[in-house]
Length: 560
Image (cartoon, rainbow, N blue to C red; front, side, top):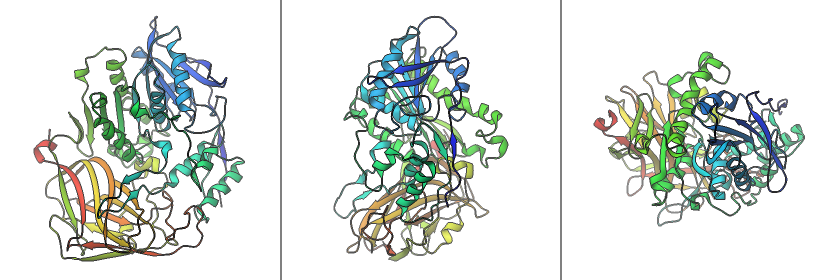
């Protein structure tokens, strides 16, 4: 059964904030807090537009305001339309481009503003930066999107088009987005409850949530069970807008890292955008828990410990302020900014002129029929596993956004009959991973579509296995004939595998409840009740592909 429901309401604005109701073009007013620096005179502004309550401890801005204003910036924090103190309909994504323009216009014309604005923020309030950029407002001079993607509201995206011998794939539909919308986008408030993931069909899980909350998420109704296209950027793609400096802040353990690194790679490949792209990649998750702090004990948990939060905030805000000092104030030369600042997990911070860093090369590890990850191919053969929609592989964490807060040992998952496990030899020297990771498999399968989940794990000498990076792909073409290559991108990482440790790869066809389960039939998976077990077979050798492609640093480069 669904757990009890509690409602999270708005916190009062701090006394040092000026609260305004900013009018949009249609008359709707958005609640906005303004924090001003002590020095008199117009100043550049840092704008944040979010749906999580502008004055809450969760978003930190009452605590961050002194650091921002001390640097000489006005801080402007706004509840987006339909959330907390703001008026209007509660509908994610759709209004952010127009409301972004109108808010930028208001900020630029205030007496305390010098007309120059940068934007900052995580997740949805990273997305609102891309939406404001799509508006084309000339006051917006730089953005710092964190743990997000410009494509958050665009739904499923084809990753690999159809080519000879290769399956056409897309991302596996996420249940995290649907769960998020059911908690955060019903009305002005946030609703706290636990879903009953045992219910079928899957769509009924969210119908029960709507009944318990007493309201529906209009955005969720456009996402499932039948996706309805909606105008995310009002027809204006931010990547086609006027190029401005962008600092992409990525967490290696963030569940949105794969989408965000695609934003960075795409813009870095465009001549007009490339000179303005900067990357800051840290070994953190979506909720800013750090690998170096694991296991997250109470005194390290910034969600509940004020001292831990105080220690975390400078690393959170300082890279953005350094970036704005260059591109909003001109207070520092651009040459002082590293093009890429990144953390090599277990080995510390690094800088580089590009990403992947110089010295990175591709290393291919072969999947063998006897369960090894090896530099050389093993004997040819077949490796099969069964996907049973009635017995799904359980997700490793309850909260995908706070992965490092749980940071589970996943060794037991590899012992399941429906999970393939491949393990490498113990390392005698450090292995530094820096760049993309991809799995390529020659596959046949008995279902109309095939879901593949891949996790690369670090196996410690004590046998515990913890995730380094993960990815998924859904093959859209039936694979019941000749084997086709399915490419599964696992995103990018920066991670040192230490001596005595081993690499392990898990491959499966479900990860529930983080992802929508494949019913094994061609029925709509949101509505499916009848299911069918399927068999997936990897073809190794004799022309078949079964390899894990790593980006590794030469020993000398890794020690720079």
